[in-house]
Length: 584
Image (tube, rainbow, N blue to C red; front, side, top):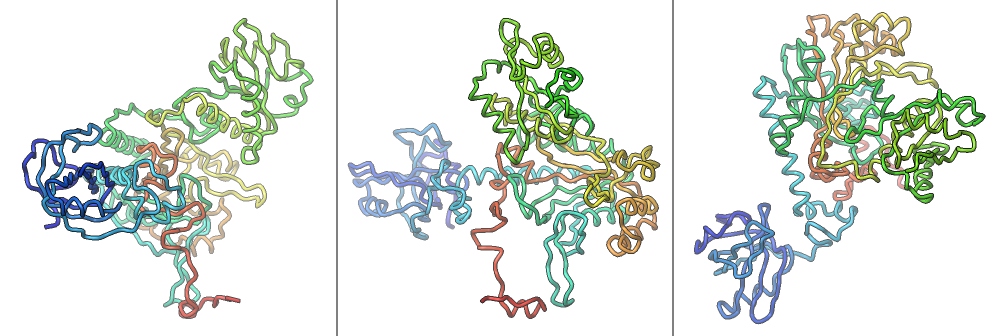
């Protein structure tokens, strides 16, 4: 037996008990005077080992040779500590060892295995197996386990069945880029790794599995950001004989359950906001509603004063930053430079300060008098001491720029509290979006999303205005999950492919099996998928999903620990009948 207790469970009630512990050396503290303390760590906590020269000189001398991350087995007796540590659960006791076995020595780690480590991202990613020993990273994975476990239990009680779907599938070029896998037995042909189990879960509904879920790996070969990885995990769900409201209620219930059980937080009913209103008031289809600062349109109040910048543009929008009229020129310049960054792309920023004496000071006050500025302030519901910030331009672009500015100001004012959770549903998305260069429509979500019933006739006359029976769950400005009511009628699905520019031959080649299945009594069905990685990162208060994934990729999509992706041997390429590497 390597251990009969963990390093996190012993308490004063265990005094005088003989125990066996195993773990890693967290720290060796040589106090002098014949006393050495060793902190022994495992997944469950830390226990202090006390070595006294006058009690057992051999063990004392041995303890002074231990290094960080050595693996020890310790037999000893629990005793009360004379100097207690209130910062750890085992801080009232220590172990007086009678026997120590070195199970393995360790080289000095490349960074400290502490909560606050001296290791940067790159070095921690290279030695991820060491990084996982640190409490914060381990706790993130424990949280992930808890969320996955509770999800399975919750859905199981509601008659959902977990079904595994294939990992090697056919490529679907209409979505994000696929990862492809060559087939040795079918030379020149390729599998793709699934971007989602979408088609299979719809087929399961046709098969009569009326409530399906799966915690499933998905893959997308896309540019990475803080909330993206080339492989990610979804809580994937589908239901038969349901409408949109049934799905929203079901998975709002799951989300509330997770917040209550995992975080101890009661979440109120989720507000609903249409896509159109989300863009109008927040400039984003995933609005962060932890703070107000809604957009206010000023175009009608700015016209006719010979300010060409406003007169020549189609949109003038403002936000009101409460209590920020005291912003200095430097602070205003910082905000201006922020919105002018290439990734945001605004040409400038106009401000109005609402002074304490009731007057207004603005960067455009040579064009607009106090009366006009007062009208702007009234519409923005700005009071003395507030700051109005204005961006103009083409409507969609300017709204997105104003959205970035709103989030930046919210961060600066400390309004984005990670311990506050605002959940909502965004509904009524456009079914289609048009690529002007290609002069064709693409599906906003995917080509199996059902249009609103009353909008179906518009597929012929005005496709751009058709609303989708689609919905996204947004928490604190993060799209955590999304889904839709699916098309279950083969004629409507064929019409959708036609609008998307598919020929009948192309639609049959890529999705014929699905359309054929619909001919055999497909039930009405709908579903959604949560991003498990994003959900865990929100619960953990992380800025990136990487630290809630055991072995993540870096921002270049590489696993620097195992050095993947990598070149493969010419012999393997020949066997797959692929081009041989040109090494010179």
